[in-house]
Image: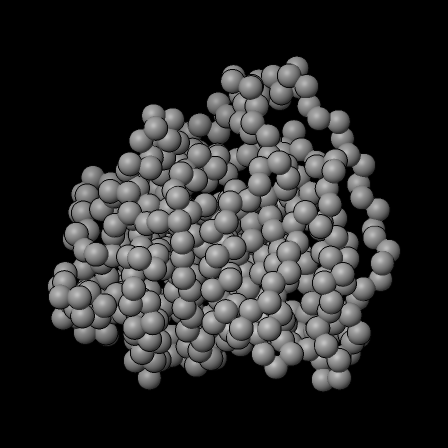
Length: 446
């Protein structure tokens, strides 16, 4: 029985905002020196063949009857990649990011596996793009990266730089579909897991206690009221900052910190700049950073394993080096604590709020977090799709509630991409904010 984990269940029940909890990746595909990007039919064949290797892309989510356990995954007997793939034509990179913002906010039908792919042309210079969207219940950032690598061409040392697209029409055999579980199966499975839950209780209590310490429970300090925290709507827009990963890593080594410290510090400084420009001066901001319990995974082991760590970042009037020192001290304090420990207490609280029908009310009014920064280390070498190099990957995640701007960071093939995802009504100055993120990062890397 393939049930949702506690973390997955939290993700599912907290999907209550006007914009769905989706994550996405925009893969910019360069044509070979002599040739063009794959046609739509080739893309469909590639995705159809490779989805066989990713069980979640062929499974639907079903709810169990009351008292028979958590929701569970079952194979979609009518799986057809054509129901998940669309083609679009845009005008340039701005059009591509605009389309990505639109499709990531479009609800995924629940009568099929929870993902979609969009093949995009018209970017310029013969390039195309593949935009892959999955519901957050399918995977977290680490899991989403495993999905992308499974959909890309297999990495082999013998592949020439301009190899022809892998468009062989043959499809690997689909694993046999097991019968859907009966009510008796669900009941037996639910009860079979109770003894293990009891045995794990001491460990879970200890983990929850560590998570409460991470969250600072017992000494609550609400963030200042600012225009950055207001209920968000059903749309998003995307800006992005692209920098040399080598230069950022070198600066982090020189300053005795991590790349994540630099990014969190730059984000805090940029948000302080935007608030100052709006005439709002505050002492500090809280940047919440998800930490996964695992550093890598495979396409057959997805789901969510992340907790969060809140970073208090000095805002108006603070020096960049002082911000960095404060951020680094807080990240250093987390090293001896279990990764993702906060998932246990947060998950319990959020699931109860959702059960009482109060979760949407809470996240639209919360004053615990100013923004989120999600940082995922990606492949060091370029991926390929259909025989073409993927020159850039832009990560996108949608967060519900009153966080009007969030930041998604991915290192990929020697570049560091910081995606700035905003509610366009609440953050009309997205371009200024994106520019300030780049300027603050440059200030730190020097």
